Image (cartoon, rainbow, N blue to C red; front, side, top):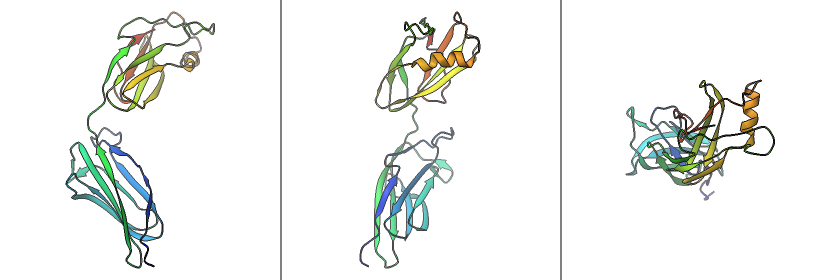
Length: 212
């Protein structure tokens, strides 16, 4: 056998994580499959190519997890890499490399419409008029925007997350929100003021961006 093992189906292809201790994407797992059983090694490397962490094993499914720490200290933001090496029983070796992005800067959400505190009326009564409210804005990077709907007493009525595939966000709040308002309370108050808050991270503390 002179053919080296091939490294296939690496997951994730675009590896991004944020080892800042906030409980969200603090660890990164890189896994793959091999064309044959082999001794494998998964290495996480710094910008200079130096190995910062590695995991070894045998079989056809290499996998390694890194917490982004070196000697207990989180690495800085920047571009890193991984390398998966595999060597079969005949000494044939194959490998695959890829890029890792360490992102420690949170996204920003600007230009939200309607503007903060702007009254926006909504009439979810099934007559087809003003059944929804539209939200728009600009995000600094791809990710998701969390939307929270609260009543005037601060009670959370509805929340959901909208993916942002580009820097521009323009999304209409679907009719299901109006229905959710009714289902969350057996007696939906048509005269109550509600707060819609949008945040650029599902864990970000929401501030009221629009009243309805």
